[in-house]
Image (cartoon, rainbow, N blue to C red; front, side, top):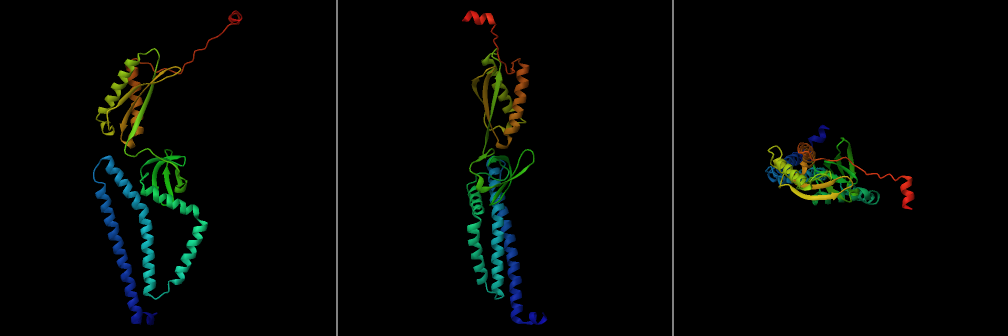
Length: 285
């Protein structure tokens, strides 16, 4: 071993190897820092667009970082092999054969990777979004080139292969519209109920506790349906995408309390039953 390191050629090769390793580590550290600063610059601001830009950039970086790290490691390995005069031709041949085997035996994996690339490139959804994909609904906690990881409301984690995603429904992109349907009794005045309903929506929109979540003034659409036991009135609010569920629950609570205070009845399901007596049937004949 001493004779090995005493050889000037081997000493030069060792120095070159250490230099390449240190240089690779330094360049990787600089690259990671530059990307991190670029993401911070892209995400400046507290508006919805800034949050979405940050989510998109972090998602792309998280997926691309793994690919970049593998690429850098392979380049470093091939460079070191060249420094030590280790022939790389057999490794290239093995890699080619391995690539052909993957092409025939791992078509589904290749499909998942390609689908994952286009999902990231087209910004269909990102980490932190609430989506429905492949029949599963949850918050995106991780995005990889092969799978998307979701966590549902019950805390369950779902791993969805990207190749299985035919339709992706993003519930938290740009904005959301909270549609509120409320049934009132047929005995109530529709005009009065609509007035109270719209007033309560407007009060909610200007409430300091909730006004930051509301993007536009509420809209009362009017009578939506004449049901079996109630008249359904409808309105909606345009809100921040991640607040739709909180806003919906709070609005239902407020409307119920307001209708109770103004004596507007929200009826139970009702059905009118007519009982025909035997003599009535005979007379009708």
